[in-house]
Length: 79
Image (tube, rainbow, N blue to C red):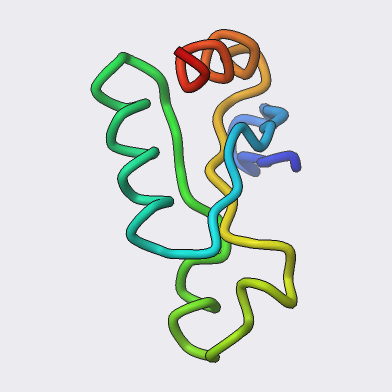
């Protein structure tokens, strides 16, 4: 996934480091990553809360970080 800032014309790649089927679990992982100094965000949480079963149908609620942090974040979550 890419994020584009129109004013500054900067693009940034993001990588999914964790997938959850429960919004609480996704937020817990996001909090752990943030506390460790990463820059995470959660994708698909609101849709999952809006429609029952949506998170499973859409492949889960994704926790993403900038691609440059992905390897370190994945290692951190594995420890």
